[in-house]
Amino acid sequence: MKLSDEQLRAALQKTQADRESGTVPAFGTTWASAENRVRARRRRRGMVAGSAAVLALAFIVFRPAGDELHYINTSELLETTSWAAPSDSLMPEHQYDIYGEIPVLIESTETYGGALL
Amino acid sequence: MRDSDVLDKNPHISRSALEAIHGQLFGWALSRCDYDKAAAEDLMQQAYIELLTGKARFEKRSSLKTFVFSVVQNLARSRYRRIASRLRLVQAAGAEVAGEAAHPVEPDENSMLWEAVQELPQRQRDIVELVFCRDMTIEAASSVMGVTTGTGRVHYERAKKALRNKLSKWGTT
Image (cartoon, rainbow over all chains, first blue to last red; front, side, top):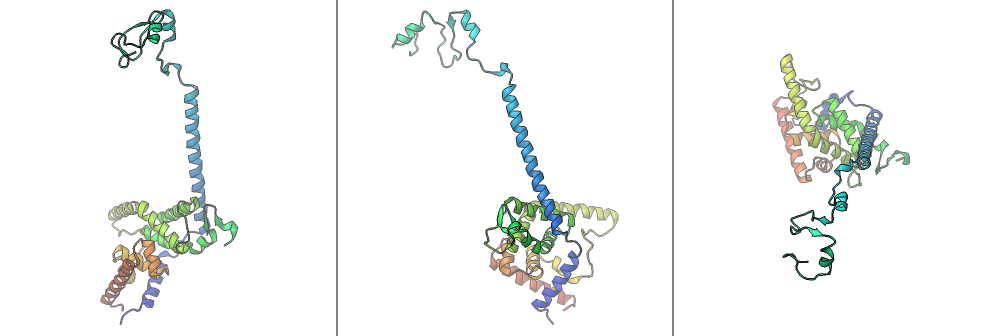
């Protein structure tokens, strides 16, 4: 004798029901736990975002002045009339006398010391 | 569907509709976690979180039941498979020490049908459970399993044949 689909269905349903009997948690409990986890996750994300914003603000406000990049030393410039270009890879090695040479450099359209003006 | 029931980020799903299939869904989650109740509860909560946050969005392309079962199936696949296999190893090791059989839930050793189902390959076991125990059509079950209806049908026929063979061998038919 062979089991029909319906007999198989009934037998399997009974076996499965026996396995699961008494194990199903209340919907309300599971749902409430899920909602709590969503809320906790949002809170956590908000705290992380808030902390990151506070840290970024603190960094901007309390950033040590020494960390700033200075291409021109103002005091050095005031004490002397000569100035060297900060990058020797971009500029020729030559010290300019800002009073003596720069007016000539600005007005000139020719090369000066091998450099294109 | 009461308006107050509707989920904010999933307007086609209501709490009451989910409550109606909660029991069956938990059974499905339980079988995804090797009948470990704590893992199944966690999996259910994860599934509800996906629905609450709108990460899994129901667009009425299938029935709600098929959709939610798919969410559980996908979550179980991605997150709980490794945990479940680790859990099995831990339980097996623990049982060896204690000299007991390793089973997450007290099994009914005399249930030949249960044993026959457990001996089926995973996909055959899944389709048998979905069609026979969760009252799904082969099309819906295939959709939950992520296979085509044709493939689902093949698994279904093979599973029935294997079950009948085993049961007749054991003289229960």
